[in-house]
Image 1 (cartoon, rainbow, N blue to C red):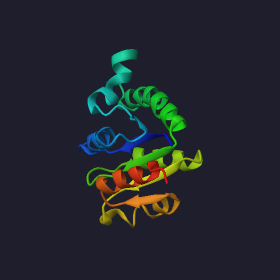
Image 2: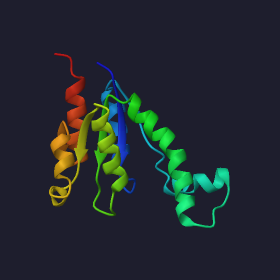
Image 3: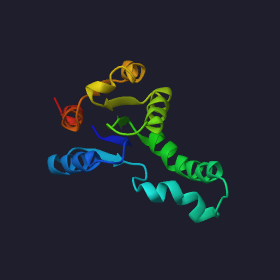
Image 4: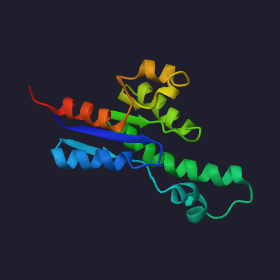
Length: 148
């Protein structure tokens, strides 16, 4: 079986690269979808394309609206949504993506460390699987593609 997998969540580590490499190395029947992971490009696309804004709210608003086109399309196409919550920053966008995935009936795999169990308990409760690390996510994806 072939899956479209959207990789959502933190952009400050190489977790996506590890998954991409595993999919390639193992020949998994998976197409990976991602948001724009270049932080500056993502944050500034609104002003770069549509012009400067004097207020930070409107700068962010423009960028969020443009980025939402990619995000919503990718989640719609996805069979599985993987959301990784990293150790730094408040990751409201990742929580939003997880909520969208569940609302759209997508299978959700969540990855986070044990210190985030309590703040993410509702998301974990809605997920199909909760992993502690990227290697576990890779193993779940590998398992799902096995022919028995």
